[in-house]
Amino acid sequence: MKRVTKLAALCAASACAVAPTIGLAKGPPPNAPLPAKAKAYGRYCQNQSKKHVAGQKGTPFSQCVTAMAKLASGKTNSPTVACGSMSKKHVAGEKGTPYSRCVAAGAKLLNDQKKNP
Image 1: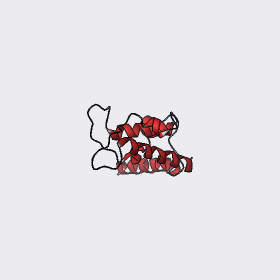
Image 2 (image 1 turned 180 degrees about the vertical axis):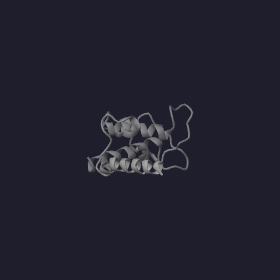
Image 3 (image 1 turned 90 degrees about the horizontal axis):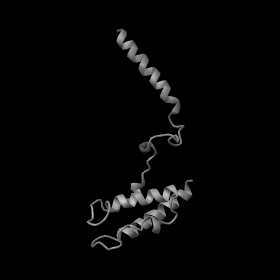
Image 4 (image 1 turned 45 degrees about the vertical axis):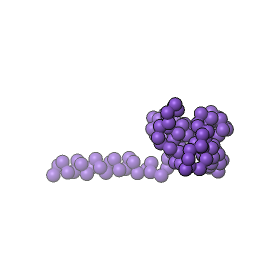
């Protein structure tokens, strides 16, 4: 019986410590580890292939996500510069090139950032 009481007290104390912070945080603190700061840039690059292309560094998807991170962090303000390393060759059966889809995604990211500063 004593063990159950201690467990109930511990659960109640931990719930009280967490409850005040629910819904109040607007983002991770500045000293948070990298995974806590990670953003969902992949949603802008969903139309990119996740298959590795010979001669390219990474997959088109990973290159696009890296380009989105550059745009979001302010390292560059131009989607054309951020996506410059991507392939400009057209792939049969797909709309546009990996480069053009990345540029369109970058423009959408910048537009979304303007709407929600």
